[in-house]
Length: 243
Ligand SMILES: Nc1ncnc2c1ncn2[C@@H]1O[C@H](COP(=O)(O)OP(=O)(O)OP(=O)(O)O)[C@@H](O)[C@H]1O
Ligand SMILES: [Mg+2]
Picture (cartoon, rainbow, N blue to C red):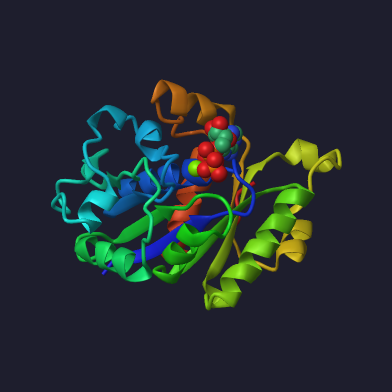
């Protein structure tokens, strides 16, 4: 049975899709089978980030509506990482039961399923969160993002998600900017969000270029090491924070 993660945020553009892509690749490199579900209906991006956009024929709404077999809707990034693309139209009247049943087609065949949610805690992220074992909230190290992570965490708790199943990823962390007092430090972010830290991903220009050039980031980059460390923690290993 796959462990299911929803990757959410309060503010948009903080790096949810980048995180999903790279964490799936890192877990795949550890030999795990990972399904990425692009949950950002209307604004899908994981197909582009994985460089499989030209292969998209079906999406998860086709599986829910029985227009396509569950296996056929998946796209292979590689042997270990597959993608279920998002519909380009908003799935009206989608229910928790629909999504739960969608997940049941895949959970036997994967170790991990990551659902890339749209920003905020609207209807779709609520459904995804309720179907997941863990909700990862992504935030950057500034006041606005930290506050939005706190609000998101509280809304998820109100929905019935247990506090112990919430985790925080601090993305685009820039040690120099923290030293100069331009960004919050790690303790400040944890104090402001009350969410248990899963990992810190540094600011890495090549992550942006990787999405344009379809090239992956270097094995030796700080961001790659940070993603591998988060993957290790998800696998249950004790790995110190890498900064
Ligand atoms: N660690 C990082 N270092 C540098 N750039 C990053 C990092 N993480 C993400 N980015 C860049 O930030 C931008 C937004 O990232 P991304 O699309 O992953 O955010 P998102 O939270 O999924 O956005 P949305 O809310 O619109 O879905 C992209 O240009 C991406 O390349
Ligand atoms: Mg996104």
